[in-house]
Image (cartoon, rainbow, N blue to C red; front, side, top):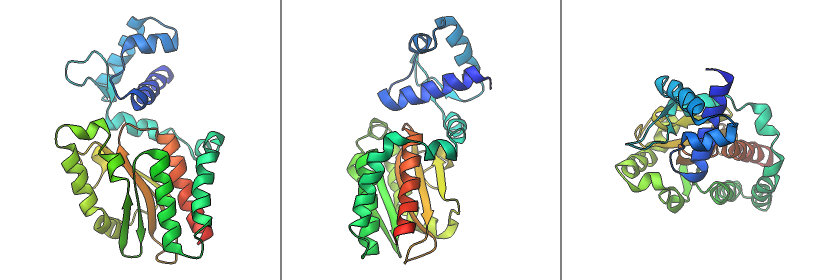
Length: 235
């Protein structure tokens, strides 16, 4: 993939996350200062490679799971740690955690509730043998889950998430499962972003969010990663 194609893919992903509708060549041509024909040619190459697709008969394009994966892989740890615009959000989570430091379970719930408010996704965390979930209304208010069987697939993923986490025990500080990469509900159109942390309950505790594949990955990954680190340091 060329540098320009990567930039176009990133623009499609970020625009689609914001407006929830397919992105056309005219919009991108204005953004990049080139002709629509040039953009259409590059989009055709991205589509042929499987990074974007046309939903139904729309003239615009949306990212595929493969496109999202390439994009997420370009988000570096350095970028995640250098996001000053999110300081207010991080401080809001920190305030919830610090106010409940004497009660680990409440601190973890507070961090989840903060993620729910900041990301508008479903938040989750393991507290011992329990899976705490908040924000189901957020999750099912996204347009992706109002049609087809996506809602059913997401519900199936949630029903089986706790046993899967115990069995698979994802071992990275930050784990991102995009759409079909999810172990359950592969057709859900959802992304699971979780951070592993040590808590009084387990060395393999998890906190994260579940939302549509269409989302601001850098922001969400930053918030989830910071929430996990914060809990580990505080508890």
